[in-house]
Image 1 (cartoon, rainbow, N blue to C red):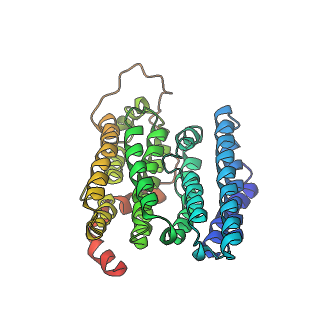
Image 2 (tube, one colour):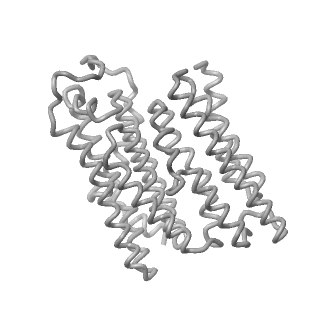
Image 3 (cartoon, helix red, strand yellow):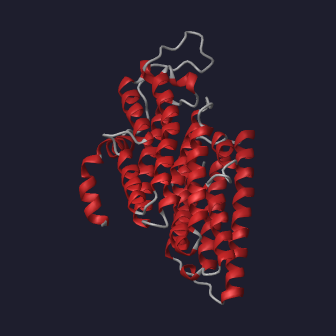
Length: 348
């Protein structure tokens, strides 16, 4: 892609998210979400592959539907209450419609069906943008609207997302689909705590962005997209395989890795809110996700690939990819758990 065009598209992505962050009026927030959607579609179709075009079409239709619902909900709230301010979404019909539309935007269950299909059709870097940056603006709106929404609705969305994200990834062999279901499960953790402790939603989002970036960039380094290709990684890059296996375990929330911090604090907060049953279901649902992360780790680090692989033969040449970004994300993904007391002190 032409570097000037790429610069314009990436700047538009940044502009759309910043506009939504900075806005207090629903029309301005909606405009930011639309700029975001329109900026990523050319990035999706830059491969000129039928799957990429299909993914971009599915993405556009779902995002356009969600944007129309948001606009309709905001207009309904203005009609019934006379207020366009995001923080004054006081009518239950309008607030419920808004949460449903934003859940469709970020791929919360049961509105998640588009996400694995779209992510499977994209290259790894565009998939990384879709899995991380594109979640920021809708989540910012969810955090602002959450206090005026029924707690039962948010809890149901969160529980369903963690369960579906765990079950859905169990039988997948494509790594991008596994990471899509991982995204659904993590969004469930964020949405369920947004009504009680929004700062923990932001913490979980930050941890998720770092861990997912590590996973996608590691896959990009080795051009691995399914489990059979992953089994050939250890002979090419043993150190990278070791760090990626730990990054996947961090995504699963195992101590002593960074991913444990957010899950620990969220479960602790839910116990404080007298929700022991919900916290127990969430913890058990995390075990489902942990299974498919362990499956990937097993394929990467503990199996030897058969000699007849359908993948392109990986040449044992030095990689030309820059490793500085990956190194930074890997360190953050693996080593932040010891600073948990400092994080608690900051957000308390």
